[in-house]
Amino acid sequence: MADRQTVFALNTLIMTTRALADDLRDLAAALHADSELSVAERALMLELRRNGPRTVPELARARAISRQATQTTANPLLARGLLERLPNPRHRRSVRLGLTEAGVDLVRRAMRREGDLLAEMARDLEAPELQQATETLALVQQAVRREAPAENAAPSASAVTPPARAREAEA
Image 1 (tube, rainbow, N blue to C red):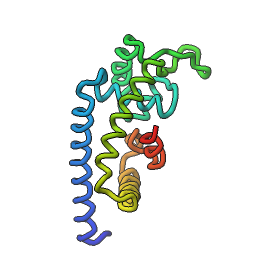
Image 2: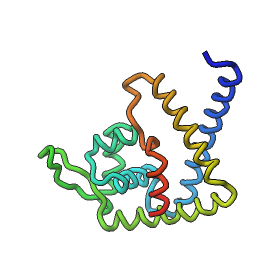
Image 3: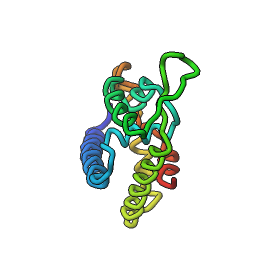
Image 4: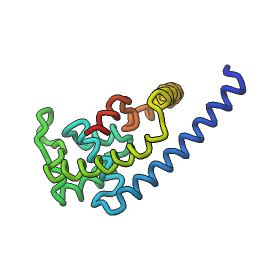
């Protein structure tokens, strides 16, 4: 059993992380307010950019949302020519979704906008502090997943390793 000070510190970290997640969601919405994409559409397209063509169930698992919600997000992107249906070599009837050239271009513009903002935010931060914070949050995430029921333990988009996030910011 952990001591009271550790439990208090963990609770404070979790509350701060929740507040940060809310702030990041609001910042992303404001940053992309004039974008052609909703936050959900952008997240789906970023997943495809990171990991290549995927089936709807694969996208749903990666983002920890339902297949129906994923399909509802994908349908307008398909209609607008930002996503395309691709053959699935593992299953004849289940297609994979991939980015079209227009989709890749739109994602690149969004990532460039985010990269500019991150560079501005990083002015007052130091890499070693951020690396330590990342390691600490990863430890907390592992502890949470140990305690989570197995049906809720699917990896999410937030489980991307820090080096992958750094590569995305550079792209």
